[in-house]
Image 1: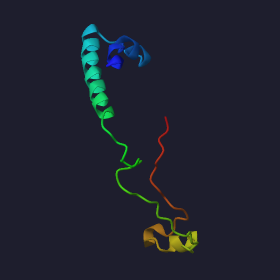
Image 2: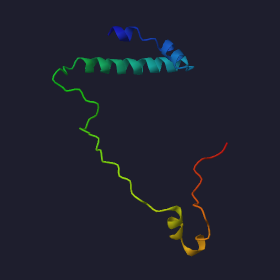
Image 3: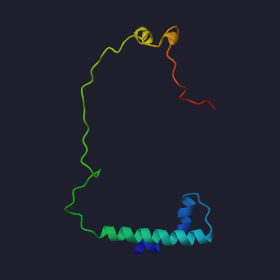
Image 4: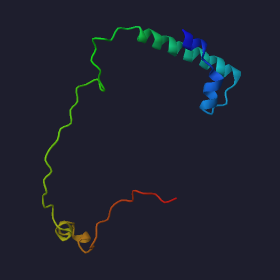
Length: 100
């Protein structure tokens, strides 16, 4: 309850660098008050027997051993190209970085 009384929407707007009209300030004050009221209700719930979690599901990292395999030399890969492209001695890839 005390937190809601101290709610100063003008100060919050200033921190967020927002230029709010009086109507917007009134609307946001009501919305934030409602949100804080809901949070206060959540704070009243007894969670002593609830184990803290960082995720809703029990997720574990799956690790595998890194193995080095031979995937072919550049020439071997170029030899697999269609006949019209075989004379090119490079790999052509789509542009992924745009210049300004």
